[in-house]
Every structure is written in structure tokens, then in C-alpha cells.
Amino acid sequence: MPGIALINARVHTFDAARASASVVVVEDGVITHVGDQGDWDNPRDLPVHDLAGRTVVPGFIDAHTHPASVAQSDWHVRLPWTTDVDELLRYIREYAEAHPPEEAPFLYFEYYPTAMFAETQPTKELLDSAISDRPCLCQDFSEHEHWVNSRMLELMEVTRDTPDPVPGLEMFVRDEAGEPTGLLREGVHQHFVDTMYAKIGWTPPRELTPERLAGFFRFMTEHGITSVFEALVEDEQGVASIAELDRRGELNSYYEGAVRFRSREDLPEAIERLKKLDAAHGGPHIRLNTLKLFLDGTNESGNSAVLAPLCGHAEDSGARLGEIALDEGQLADCLRDCNSEGVDVHIHLVGDRAFRVACDAVEKVQGQLAESAEDWRIQVTLAHCELVDPADMSRPAQLGIIVNWTTHWSGGYFGEGAQEHLGRERWDRMYRFNEIAESGALVTFASDVVTSYELHRADPMLGMQIAHTRVDPEYPLDPATYPGSRRPEESARLAPEMLLAGYTINAARQLRQDDKLGSIEPGKIANLTVLSADPLTTDPEDLGKITVDAVLFEGVLVHGSL
Image (tube, rainbow, N blue to C red):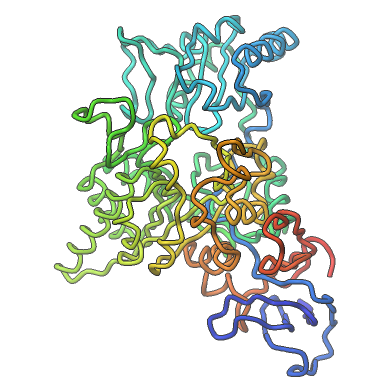
């Protein structure tokens, strides 16, 4: 593999021994020299590229995303963005009339704003008024609730006697008589939807072929991302296709995948599946050694696990504290089993009680292991952590827990929906990560995109802009209530230095890739991203305008030009 030298560059290395440089030399896919003009004389007569002051950073790492979900969503129908229920129903009705059942036997719409039903809840009867001749599903903007019509419930054979797979989380919302209302929480329909498909004699295009996944990874490459973590692997075909893209030389990315578990009962099966996937498809660029758990729901849906009662319920009601999948003891048992197997754990949680339970469980297991002279050898990552009690901010650092945040959520992406359940005081202190980082914890960043509808928001520069300004240019908050459409609090804005570290060296540590990726230093693999401007000196409002001029993957130019 030929070598190259990049000179006259503004290099942010994220190497503790040397923060900046102007020269990077790559030979045989590996960085062999990092320095300044004048301390390298090109002894091997390598091709030299003058970057004219452009910025070079380590290849970005998206530490929580969903390539398979994005690829499989290409048949979904995009809804107009409106909080007017009549306008939404009119669009659904007109779309159904233009696309009869023989053409579209099942209609899947995304998204309706969660705030559309702030004062009430969507019902099957309401959706029936727009479409009743076939199954129909509308996904809400939080991506954790679904609104379905009567026909879909009927075809899934869901009745008042159908048990909820995970009560309080994966569940059917019901009326006083126990009848499903048409509102579904989390992915509960996935347990029943195959029955519907069998009855209508149709299934959506599920095949996760290399060609179908290629677009996702091409987008990542074009935006400087050279490593991804898939936070939920549901289909072996997807991993096999990613491995095939790698064999073809079209992946241009390192890949880590996670398999879901729900309880200690299904944990052995999940671990076995994870290890089989890694044995079958793992390699130099592909690895599967992480399990995924959904510990609570979402703040917008009102089923996050919180320390103080949610709004509108009696103080003495246990359900008032939201829903949690496992208590401290149950989660501790799972973590200890994972530690015995050497399997890392990635936990979805958004409420402050879920955050505390996760920290308590880790602390409990670490104490048990210390008493028996056993090593704590796994990594636990808490994803989202939207609401954290101030008393718990320093616990990730104390316990070695990694915190992963979705940067493009930092402004108005989910609107004010969570206020209904949390109240204004708690809503104002959501999305705070500076205190966690300042205490010494590892904080990483990601896109968590799950549909082609939002793939453009996986651009790290857009995410950095929103996290730094707390303003979402696509979904601004009402400026009459929030000056400048900026989400409170001002002190929660994340600095560009922290954001760059979270997308590079910190994310490499989360994925256990920091021995070879994440920083620009001799001996590491030459995954490099060349930017049109320096994020550390660019006006905050213009961070999203920074483009990726070139990407090197293992020393090979895979996008753009030098």
C-alpha cells in the first residue's frame, strides 16, 4: 500500500502526548509520523499533499446508530409535519385513496409529532376514520410509540386477553375495559406482526442485502465516519451483508454490533447468539461483543423511570414513577453474568431513576467481585441519560461507566412533549453532560438514526452544531417562549473540543478500538477526516456548514480529494 504525506494542515490529534500538528505521514495504512513543518524531510520520497490549512481529525465514530433500521425503512411513507390532527388524517385518507390495497396492503406512516396528542391519546377509531380497509400504522416522532387502526389489531389477533410482552414498556395501551385503544408502546407490535403478514399475504421488503445497506455506509463515509456501533442487531442477514460489503471493499468502516436481551431468563440465549454472530461474521473490521438492554421507555411517552412522581398522578401511586424493565438486583445479576462471559453491555435509559438503578447495579456487582477477588472486566455504556439527578452526576466517573449522547437531540428535536410528564423544572435540566464529563467520565456521541427520514441528521457536524448551540435549525422551539429558540439551560451547551473528543478518541474507547483508532499518532491506523474548516474556530451557528473534503480509511482515499 503506497504512502502519502499531508502537510500544511491543522491537525487535531487527540493524542495526549501531542495535541496538534501540521504534518501527518501515512505508510502501509498506518500513521508513521506526526509533527510540524521542518521536522520531516520525506526520506522515502512519498507523494505530498498540501492541505492549505484545512483541518484534519481522526475518522469520526458514530457510537450508537441503526444501519439495518435505516435500510429497512425505505418503504415507509413520510407524513407532513403538522400538529393539526384533521390535516394529518386528511393526508392519510388521500394517500390511501391514491394507493389501493392491491398496491399497498399495509401502510406505515412516519412521523406524527408527539405533541399532537398532548391533551389526549390517539385511538384506533380516530385512525379508522381515515383508513379502515387495511392495516395502518403511524409512528410518533419519539420513535417509541405507534398508533394503529382497528384492522391492524384484528389481523394481529390482539384482543383484551392478549398479554403485554413487557408490561409498562412493550405494551398495548388499554381502556378501562382492558381493550387495546390503538396506541402501542415501544416495539410491541413486532411480537404479533408476522400473524398479520401471513393473513394479508404480504411482507415488507425485509431483505438486508449488501446493496440495501450500502447507501447507509456510503452516507457515513461521505460525512467522515469510519467506525459505527449498531445498537440493535435483529437480523443475521444484516451482519452477513455488512461482512460482504467489507469483502468487496465497499464498507470503509469498522463495525460493532449489539444483540438485545430483556431479562436474565433470555440472557444465555442472547449471549449465545452474539457469540455465534461474531464467530460467523467477525473479522478485522467487524466485531460483535455487546448486549443491548432497554431499561425504561421515553420521557415524551411518560414511561421513563423517574425518581419523583410524573405529573398528573397521585404521589402514592407506584406507576407514577414510570416503568423500568429490571430492578437493581435483577440488573446486577445480568451484569455479573455478562462479566463472567466477558460481554459488554449497552443500556438505553432516559429517566433519572433508571440512571440511578443502572449505577447502583454496577456498584453492587463491582463490590461483589471485589469481595471474591474477581476482576470487573466489561464496559457498561448508558445511552441517552436524558435526565440525571445532580447527586448522580459523578457516579459514571467513579464506576467507570461510559455515557453516550445523541447530539442532534440537544435542541428542539422532540419539542416540549416531555414537559407534560416531567414538568418544566425537570424538562429544563434535561440533556446535561458537562457535569458528567467534568467529573472525569467518558462521554461519547452518536446519531441514533433509525430511519431514512432522518439519515441526514447523522452528519456529525450538524450534531455538533446543535449540541453546541442548543438550537435545532430544522425543529426550532418557539422563540416567544425560548429566546433564540435555544433549549434551556445555557450552561448545558457542549464545547466543540468536548464534541470532537466524543466523536473520536472517547468513542474509540467505548468500542474498544482505541488501541488502533480514535487519535492521530504514530502506530495507529490512518483513518483520517479532512474538514473544510476548523470546528474549534468556526462560528457556532455555522458548524453544520463544515463539509468533509476527504476521508482516508486505512490510508486509502475513499471519499473526496486531497
